[in-house]
Image 1 (cartoon, one colour):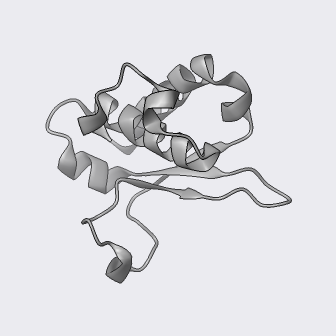
Image 2: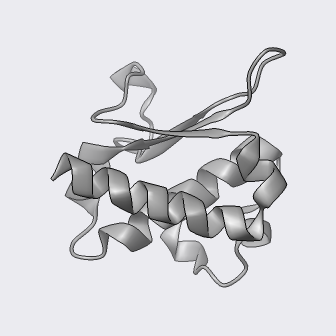
Length: 109
C-alpha cells in the first residue's frame, strides 16, 4: 500500500510539474507516514501535509502525510494528494492555491 501511495504522490507532482515546471524543479516532494511536528501546533486537526521552506542551500520540501491523507480520503486518494500538493506549492511560492490550479475546488484545500 505504501508503494501505491508513493506512486500517487509522484503522479500528482508530475501533474503540477506540467503546469509549473520551473517551480516544481526547485522543490522536493516527500512522503512521511505521520507529521513530524508537535501535535500541540495542530490547531485545525492533523495536517495532511506541510512545507519545509527553502533555505540558502536547498529548495523547499513539500511533504504529504500518508496516514493523515488515507484517513481523510474516502475513495479518491489521488484527488486529496493533488489538492495537498497544490496547497503546499502555493504556500512555498507565496501564492494562492487558486493561482496554482484555478480548476481545483477551493473546498479541496
